Amino acid sequence: MPTSSEPNNKLYFENLDGLRFFCFLSVFFFHSFVTDDPAITQAPSYHFIRVSLLGNGFLGVNFFFVLSGFLITYLLIKEKMANNFINIPNFWMRRVLRIWPLYFVCVFYGFVIFPFIKTFAGGVPNETANPWLYLSFLSNFDTIHHGLPDALGLSVLWSVAVEEQFYLTWPLILFFFSVKKFWMPLCFILAGSVVFRAIYDVPILHELHTLSCIGDMAIGGLGAWLMLQSTSFKNRIYNLPKQAIFFIYILFAFVFLFRDEFMLSNFWLRVLERPIISGIMLCIILEQCFAKNSFYKMARFKWASRLGIITYGLYCIQVFVISITRGLTKIAGLNKQVWQVVFLETTVSLLISIGVGLISYRFLEAPFLRLKDKFQYGKKGTAQIKKPGS
Image 1 (cartoon, rainbow, N blue to C red):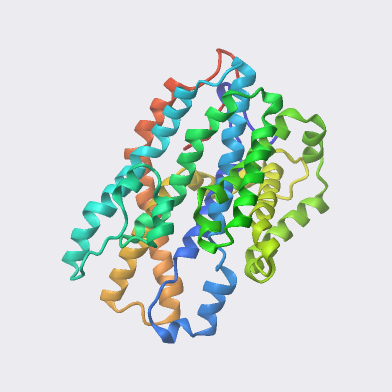
Image 2: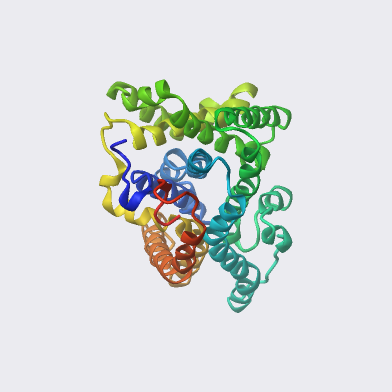
């Protein structure tokens, strides 16, 4: 396809880096603009920005899940097509080298360093989170049962835990299926996710439980399977008319702005809301990667694509930075007006996050990423999937 590139026989989807950064930005804005000042929270401008405009910014996490399902399934299908098997230990090792170093640094900071910082600042540590659940990548269940941790920076790690659960089980499942039958476990998982949401109609379970989130990844996986196994589907995506592409983005903007009003109003909409939105997200991913009639490819956002490479680090450290920035602006008395909370704090937090993210990528993540080449799949001369910075 003309929208992907194959430098040195390694295939990657160049338009997804910029898309990944905008997903992070959505989540970042959702976590920003926090204040205890009632005069600010009651201001119409503040309410419009934080609630009406960016209140569904957490959907960026859903997008990440769909993206992971698509990329990982695409990778595993390509491997099985090339070698007739999936090298599960190598797959796991690639994921370990990508995820674990920064993840465990964040866990160490949250449980060991943060209490000292809070005590030094005059606070009293009151951590309710179970460190063993974080160490075993089960922290989404800790948040479900105990609420947000005292070290708020730990709160975003629940989604990393869900992804790790997916990475652990997904290749094991696909190992026993032929490529032509990959759709079977994907559809079973998606159906099971919908049934779970129907049985447990509880908001926090819909948002954080693995059996709810896994449907996003299954939808992404189905998109990958269809692109590689169905010529007619691939041709439809490749030849998507501009009108259809325009409709996809309008539909996504609609659910992003009005999800609560229109997607949660009755039982069946709540049950199907997540799969519906994930389906729209998958359409955006496929359009960016494969459609020839796109209005604009994300790879043309050079700065966003560059920052997309460090998105994992940005995502993990964002809330730590936001919390520290809030503390500093409070000490300096720069959090008393709407513009200070909305623009000053947010801009400073974003710039610091990018700076720390670049340092993390350069000195912590990159050395481990270079080791991933030792565990790449594929025979000599076989195209490999390579996502820059992933």
